[in-house]
Every structure is written in C-alpha cells, then in structure tokens.
Image (cartoon, rainbow, N blue to C red):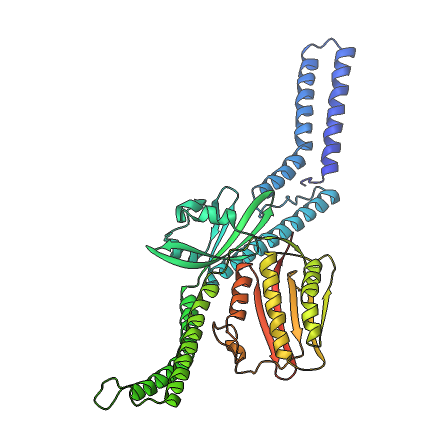
Length: 454
C-alpha cells in the first residue's frame, strides 16, 4: 500500500529518526562498539536531510505554481496527490485561481481584439503616443496615410511627419484644430483632436486625424455659389437702373445722326438730366460702399484671449445699451447662473458680437410695444459657457434661416448683410460657435458657445 498522507509520512519519518537516535545513544553508552555509532550517526544525518527535503516538497510545488503565474502560464495547477485534507484545499484553491486567471486572460484578449476591431473600423487616423513621442498604437488608416508598411514598435512620431511632434505638444486637449500636413507630396487639410491621459504612471496622447479636404471643398463651393448669387443680385440691382438712366441721357443728348446735340434741351429736360445723373451717382456710391464692405468681412482682427467674467461682461453691455433700448420701449434683462461663470475669449470681440445681436433684436422688434430682449448665460452638458440672446420680435422666415450667415445676404431693406457673417467669423476665431433658431411672429434665439476658462 502506497502511503500518500502527508501527516502519516512525516510521523513515520520522525519515528524512524527517533529510533535511530535511540540506537545511536544505546550503542555509544552501553557498548564498546566503534562502527555501529558511526553508521547510526551517518544514517541520522541522511534521515534529517530527507525529512527536510520532504517537508519542502509542498513549498517547491507551490513556488512552481507562483512562477507559472508570473510567467503568465495558467495551465499549471498544484498537484493533487492525496496528502491530506489541507493539501486538497490548497490544490482546489490553486485550481480556482488558475481558472479565474485563464478567464481574465481570455477576456483581456477578447477586449484587445475588440479594441483593435474598433480602431480599424474608424476611417480617421488614430495614434497613441507616449511622453517620448514614441507611437504605441496606430490603426491601418494611419499606416496608409503615412506609408507605414508594417508596425515597428515603437516608431518615432517624427518619422511619420516632421511637424507632428510640435503639433501634438502644442495641441490643446479636448479641442479640434485645423492643421495642414504634406502627405504624398500634397498639402492636406486635416482636423486634429487630441486627448491626454495617464496610465500606470506614464503620460500618453491619443491623436485622431481626419482628412476634411472633400468636406471643405464642398462647403467652399456651396459658399461661393451662395455668395455669387448675392453679389449678382446686388450688382444687378445697382447696374440695371444705371444702364437704364444712361440710355435715357444718351437719347436726350444724341440726335438721330449720332452726334451730340444740346440745342433742343429745355429747362425741364435739363432738370431731368441732372436728376438722372444724381441718381446714377448715388447708386454708384452705394455700389462702392458695398465693395468696400469686403474689407471688414475679410480682415477680422486676431483675438487676444483672456479669462472673462461673464456677469461683469453682461452688466457692461446692459449699461451701454439700456438707454437706447428704453427709448424704443424695449425691456432688456440679463441673467447669469452660476454667478462666477468665466469664459476664455477676446473680451472686445465678444462684446462686439453681443452688441450686434442686441441691435439685430431691436430691429426685429421694431415698433412693438411689449418688446423684450433677454441675455442669459449658463453651462451646457459639455461644461461650455453658453450665452443666449433672445427676443420676441418678428422672427426669421424658414426659407431665409439657412442663408443668414451668407455674406451680404439680408432680408432687411437697409441691411448690409455682413453683421451676422462678421459675428460668425469672430466666434470661430475665439474657438466658439454660433447657432440661430427662430419662429416667425414669436421671436429669435441666438446661441453663443465659448470655452470655459480654467
């Protein structure tokens, strides 16, 4: 019968060791034997070594299991050799640990495959870069863009494009930036979005790059088409009466033979000619003003960013515009919540945009007796600062709303059509955006979104 019980094996070895000690003492004290004590002493040493080795067997087996875990080999289990209940519990616990680790490893591999599938599904170029500008992860789109045939990790970011390291370091986290990179020998407009995070004590940057050339080309073409329509309308409105009046003047001053003849011109015709010339002059000056308005639209000043206290900003605008609005029987109210709101922008340009919007609201209200304008400030879900200018004026027709930001487009007879266009350019320059919603007969609401300071 094979004895595998640990306690029984230890007990037998201890009894044998004690018996050998008794024999050694008896032979040494009771007899004159010389060889027997020496042999007993040698056997005693061997028994002690064997006992220690046997006792350490379980430790070696457990150490082998831990070494396997360290080497990420989860197929090794603590051996079950019927040494006793305590060792059976240890073997069972070892088996459960290995099973859990195998399951976690499988889940980790599955999540890695899912992440790789997601990365490859995205059409944008994605790069994960460490603090030393080494590329840790890049998807297939990025490899195609930068001509990387195989992934040699880690690859230096500067080898993809010499400008990329500086662009990534200077990028503001959580903001979309427009950059230009030379890809395949051509300058390509790209939208770059950067996120920074820390993992296991190391800092990383996740960068997404999207080629927006086609989108920009489409929007540019659409903008040109709308602008050309407005220019054509404005120029034709000016040139057509000028040509008509010039034809009348020619018929008055030139005879049937095509020669200048002023002999038959009476006082009444002379006054008509003068009025015609004055009309042509006035229309020509109006056309010149229209052309000069390009300068104000094309030369938007560069913003100087600072932290702006929203409540103080609204109070200044209220103090500035309230007397003028009261004369027009229009009530102006401001509201900011929370009171300590701070935005990041050029304060002068923000004031200019809000003043333009309030004046537009005043014109939309017109002679209405219960005119109201509200300027409110708050935080949206993305923790951006929003300023809203709303009125109860005439509103904007649904067919006119898509064109309100087109340069020189105006539904007002005396409007230049550049106020909202300039406001939109100023908002873009300040890293914000503007949106308009309106209901004819009920009023208009203009939303301004800014970055939050801090």
